[in-house]
Length: 133
Image 1 (spheres, rainbow, N blue to C red):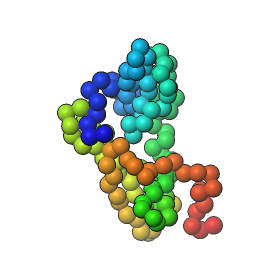
Image 2 (cartoon, rainbow, N blue to C red):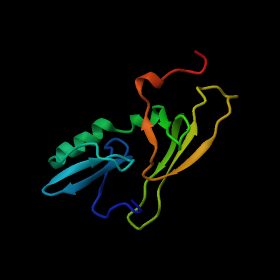
Image 3 (tube, helix red, strand yellow):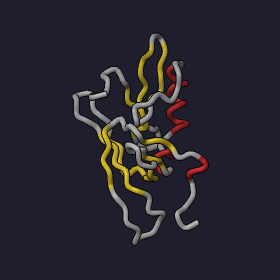
């Protein structure tokens, strides 16, 4: 997806007006779309699509993620920034950094991914192990 589709309607959280996703038309219904450009609901009534986005919110941004790169093992990362594409064609980006597990002296690497990101996925339950045991 090079640009944000013009028919996607931004949805902002009511408390602070922070963008939490979009609602896009699908026939006579509406679909909730995350900041990553992924559907978070099927076709719904407008209010239900809003509710789906409110339920997802932005809390998922604080969770650890896994980045799959080529044939190498996936690496654990944290999301630093999400800048979606814009309707006028500006490319978006997702910035991640390798997990430092809260250690101030741990080496880390910052990586810039295109928006929507490919190879970035939520951690699975069996991947939550710290390198320190």
